[in-house]
Image (tube, rainbow, N blue to C red; front, side):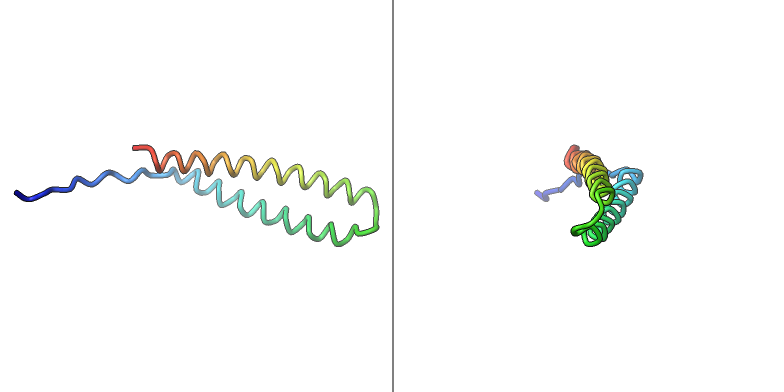
Length: 81
């Protein structure tokens, strides 16, 4: 008797999620680059720049959390039948 394999359909991750992840990756990269420039500029410098670094770090953390949530959702979608 011949064994027949039934292929499981591969879940499709919505393009919107993939696009959103790519946009968030780019945004995180830009924030990280901005932070690095500011950190170099503020070593021993102005309080306003230190405040800007704090603001950018908070925004980066928000973006990172959103990115991680979307990534988890994407993984869940690829694992679920």
